[in-house]
Amino acid sequence: MTGIDDTLGEVVGRVLAGDLERFCRDVLTAAGADKETVDAAARAMMHGTRLGVDSHGVRLLDHYVTALTGGRVNVRPDLRLTNEMGAVATLDADNAHGAYAAYSGMDHAIRLAGTNGIGAVAIRNSSHFGPAGAYAFAAAKAGMIGIAMCNSDSFVRLHDGAQPFHGTNPLACAVPANGGSPWLLDMATSAITYNRIQLFKSLGQDLPQGTASDAEGQDTQDAENASMLAPLGGSFGFKGAGLAGLVEIFSAVLTGMQLSFDIAPMAGPDFSTPRGLGAFVLAIKPDAFVDQATFEAGMARYLEQLRASPARNGARVMAPGDREWQEVDRRARNGVPLDPATKAAFMRLSENFGIAMPQEVAAEA
Image (cartoon, rainbow, N blue to C red):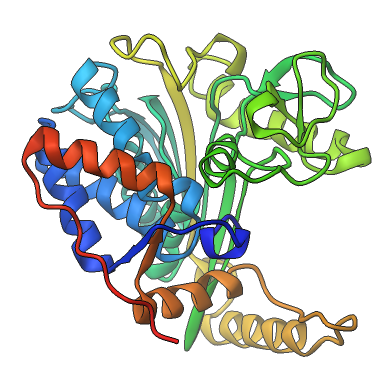
């Protein structure tokens, strides 16, 4: 989890989620984005922020404005299916915002799964899509199992490698749980995410050990000195590198889009040229494989036994997503924390576009 509250770093303010979403929508609209782009980008960012995945939450707003106004992202894209065959389709996103492309792709996947039991959509000509879990979660809300993945520009070394090769290449899966929040796995295939380095820079904190490397491929905990990330798995990083390759194949090779080492850097300096990212989403209708009652009973028993499993001293066993759903409740009560760099960026956006800042609130004890 990448929440600000968990880092114990400096938080310069808390705002109500609803007012924060209003600010994001107003800024994106002022930046020239159409309604569909505004809806999707704000929805994805607020998913990250509400669940405590701050590295992929509203701190991305400033970057998205730069990409929209610079021309990297099409502010009025024409998304269209270029082919559809049975349970599969390809969506050309016309260089749309990645959230708009991914939500649209998942909508098509859900539709296909409703007819065929499974729906898979390869997405072409997309851009940075933020929290992969947002799109998997969209399928779970529709009663389906959702999977989403996307490659990105090279920033992660291979196992025993000394230069960037894969992107952080996130992978997410959400499974509906009758009467409760979905089982939600949302992970980068790197040890940590690129945006978490930016978050740690803002908070002035050291990186966790074994998560990043300097320009020579040597481990570093200095966020300012991090030139690349380590693959997931530490001394067993070949597993993370292999997972990153799986995402690469589904997101880039299967879509005909650029491989990680051919993608222009997210951080620029070129913000006028589309980056040509690919993505892949999948929706599965459970009762196409087993009757709904059996599926629900199986998930309920699995989660019950998982959470009841004995924990080590001072620890607690949780299912994927449990921490995030707790954070949703906590932030609904206490407001959403903003790190220093994000608040400073919001103040610039507020001044540039003449939009009122989100109002700060006092956190409850």
